[in-house]
Image (cartoon, rainbow, N blue to C red):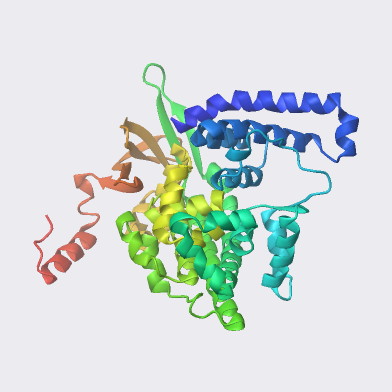
Length: 466
């Protein structure tokens, strides 16, 4: 349904783009004097429409933004920054205000602020200098720095809001102890650095993945069927590169947290307990409340681990929170809130990642090459020979897809393999699971694995597998 709605919004987005460009041409001199480009005017028109939609339905506003990105009208980073304002309850409450930024106001992107802080002798003090400029209206900050500004040096009205209701106890810690603010800042800085490393790799991965799996239609009417052809060599390379990029990002995060903890005396607040972080990343929604007292360091590590799992299809509770706050709302809020609160607010926003069927298939095949699957299925992959695999859609329900697998012969023919791939959503969080179903003739092929499973079951006192 979400994909269909995005398609419906594309026409509206293109109309908005034409209207903005027409206005620019009609008053080019005026806009050039105040340094507003045609593209900036288009972005402001999209922002204005989003404000109105967000006032009525936040989900429709999000889909409108995604349609604008899909149509190439605005950049993804621009859309995500704009959506961050919706989540912070600034955009919807300002629906009647003009979208134009006052002349002379410097707009800092996510990357620009990070580069400034990374090169500063004292990043925390440098950030406070930027915040002072933002608080008097001289600069405008993108997420996560806007959230961090509010949490570290809020304006009086913003501080009053932070001290209301159930959030008062949380923010009171920050008012009493500057180290909480400092630790939140450095945890955010370390997470942003690591996330930037991994995100760059994922963007490259997404581009190559499009070429690794191609959607085609085969046969004649009325028997025409949808088929997907996968290049397993490219898929294997993708698995290796993504895995290496994640380990590199995780290493950078550990290093950053440890360095800041030692340099600024924030050991307890930036504690890097990886075992605790992995348990948080894997926790079910009811278990999140058990992690209310974990350090910023644990939450940062868990966020990166859970974000990866979420993008791979495992829709865990903290993964949903991590994806929302890193991509949409701002990582500072993810680290500031207790895990169960961060998840609750992400659920309330209902900004979900849209996943195409082709993307799910690519991910299912990519997992064949991840440990321990790479070892388990290695002989099966070698059997394919040509390195090309074809998948034909065989059945579909509301929560599952079933594909029949074929080997693509060098001459162009198809050889049925007696294997099916089932992609399904399970559980309350609707995690995506990928299951290969082998016909009976594969029992001999996997005899070694089956015998090992029987032996393991006997050793732990279980019934032998049959």
